Image 1 (cartoon, rainbow, N blue to C red):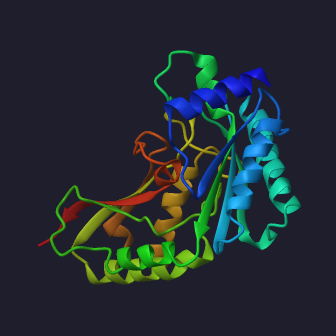
Image 2 (cartoon, helix red, strand yellow):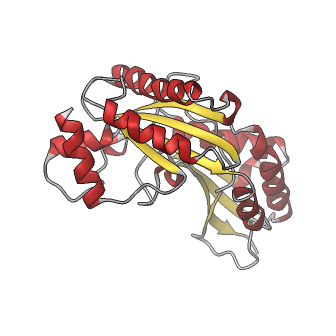
Length: 272
């Protein structure tokens, strides 16, 4: 308990990553039981949501870099499940909780400290992301006006921000299908564009790829890029115009983790 208290004081004094719609819960080494002090913080967070219209809640569990991949995947899932149980116990509708996923190991230097124990302590966590109603949909609508600009040049990248994959899997959620259809229609029109579909993931060590929960293979960035490729082929975009690659966790954006779980289209050639 002393370790958790010290870490919390350090966290409060050195970083301010949490916002009014995010919350982070920290754990002891090798444990998925929520410490008492963390339970109290979580209760306050849940109570702050009672008068807010919620669209969805996502819960992601993480471990530090110690332990095997399989051990950390199980432990991170247990941590996420423990948080969901607390939400359910306080009457939060299970239908609002869209994701409860263990992501395995992570080791991000989120503070400027050389103390590896402190860094590991801040990576043993569960992240809770709450999406409010009537806010995010408006942002998405603005961004979805058109994927392809008229002035695209070789080397330009198009980030598919509103194409959302099911956590840990290579296929998109149902709400993203209309966005994919719109993108495919634009690419059929722009027959002059040749491009590479690039898949990225977050939260892995040493620039590794993430696990595809369906296949058990560590190639999730490649599998997601291949999913987009296959979809575009099915919708009439010629294979000769595109290729796909998985870039693992080699190019993090340095923002929130969710932004690193992405697919981009890089323009490689423009025909006359």
